[in-house]
Image 1 (spheres, rainbow, N blue to C red):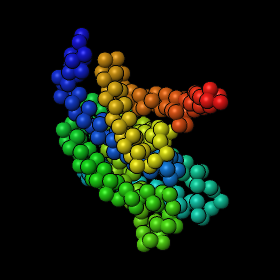
Image 2: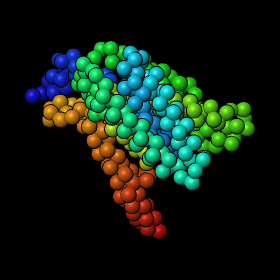
Image 3: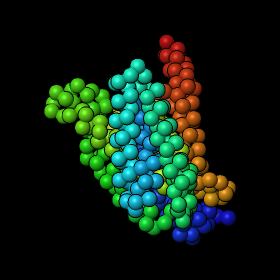
Length: 291
């Protein structure tokens, strides 16, 4: 099989075209948002919101409302409950996050088990990338475009909020509103990624690309380019590997992202475990030869 045939064969099927488009959109949007989540230290919050939207998505399905509406409502509900538990008890934030997201996730599982449906709602949990319909893809495109446009348009404000909320407040920005906006975008992004990898793996797509880019550069502007670029490449590679090896598509996409992170973690010239040692050794040899 030639390289051209290798690349074009999966695209002979409409479901693969829809899967590829969905994966690319979800990967890019998640990667851009992940830069802020990693910078702020909201990895656990991303985990919490991505799991907490499950009951909202199920209830939205029951009443015939858009998935995004239920996800946003329960995303903000999760944040409010975490804050209430943290502020009104001795329980610390990390424990509050674990309690709230696991409870809401369990509620979603219960709702799925008792909700009569002609479709298998388990795809919300585990993803059903190869079963994405044109209607699902349209929803992903709309939500992805809205989220991406807001992130790009307000990137300076969000970045200032991430680095120095006090300074953001001093120049007239409202840190609470910026934080709430990021959480709302997090909920929307979770809905986009649900179609690709399901609730269980959404958090990986929201954290791994940003963490990988963080090890490659010290400039946030470059992170916003590197993270979605890596994520998009991993999406294509993961989907093609899953097609030819007949494996779970969403899981393979995330596994590819994880493999790239391991390589960067080991060999990044700036912050890699082995890469920095190699660079330092070369510098020492160059300095010794110069002397």
